[in-house]
Amino acid sequence: MSQFVFKMPDLGEGTVDAEIVAWHTKPGDAVAEDQLIVEVMTDKAAVEVPAPVSGRVVSITGAPGDKVAVGSPLIVFEVGEGEAPAPLSAPSPQSAPMQSAAPAAAAQPLSGPSAARPGRVMASPANRRRAREAGIDLTTVVGSGPGGRIVRSDLEPSGARPARSGPETSEIKVIGLRRLIAERMSEAKRNIPHFAYVEEVDVTELESLRQHLNLSRPAGAGALSYLPLLVMALTRTLESFPQCNVLYDAARGVLVRHRAVHVGIATQTPDGLKVPVVRNAEAMGLWEVAAEIRRLAERARNAKATRDELTGSTITVTSLGKLGGIASTPIINAPEVAIIGLNKAIERPVVHHGAVVVRRIMNISSSFDHRFVDGYDAASMIQALKELLEHPATIFIPKVKST
Image 1: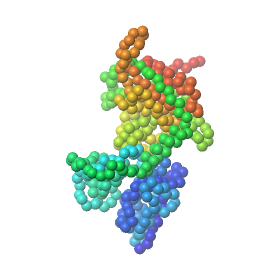
Image 2: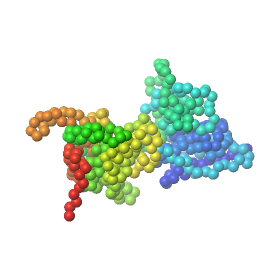
Image 3: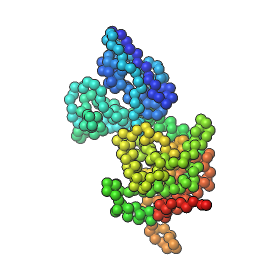
Image 4: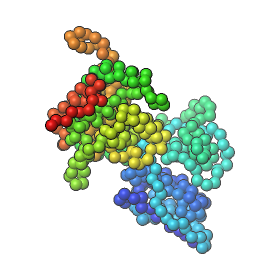
């Protein structure tokens, strides 16, 4: 017998270390080649690392929350004499679903054999976390997803859950994506002087247009919400306010102004908030934008969105839908310099053309990086956006270029 030391692989894009999220093996375990052994997290993505060889685990390095440098020993295997390890290559990073801050409720497998299955278990990092927190051995769960993949419903309880007794509090270590989210939010709030601006918008005509378009929508198209209409209006507005379609490269001290508008759509998912990106929104028609938002949102919610689909936005739109409240103060999605938030649309009495009438009103809450966007320009941009939304036909009229 001999020992094989597997080192933390280079996961690309300048990664110097990775955080241990969860071990799926322990010293003394026998593992097969390609069996999942550990989940790690870089600043870019969650990565599932498979075993490079078959053998017995002698030792592991790091506990969940610890960082291991690239090239440092990660796990030691005892392998048979003459057994050559497979060539090492960096595992493929998966999309990084944001984890919920609260632990998942305890669950039991719906069905399946009690004996552990050999080989690699197919499950997303989020479902592995749920199973780990609930004390479920995934090798005993029969997956109902494609190819036997374990999905969230496979971890749900099969019947009424009996009352439990236990401690009044529990401690949850902040690791993985939740740690990354916390760091990025703290960094954005600490380093970016936010300028907040809230404006009231009369969306009565926009609502009328939306309902009309929904009655004649193309075959297979879903119901139109305000979001695609806002994105269309935003792309038109940014033609006159290119300083808000910008990324700040802090390392070089450079503002990178983009001609294309890549709109990040803040999307609530079972695993937390993700921001898939509608690329080149300015070149799309309304139904194209609507279809792309739906496609990306579905992929994000099903933890299928790729890294490319979750990065590269130049400005972000966030909406709380029916929970939108009166106003909000959204945090800028660095390195962007602006974020636009939609609040709840409600009908209420207002003075319109000298008479008190019922109109549909919605507030837009926005935040700007005050280092690079002056308050006057921020307010002017929102006023221009308001003008388009209150007269929605103008969203689709080509801009007349001055000679």
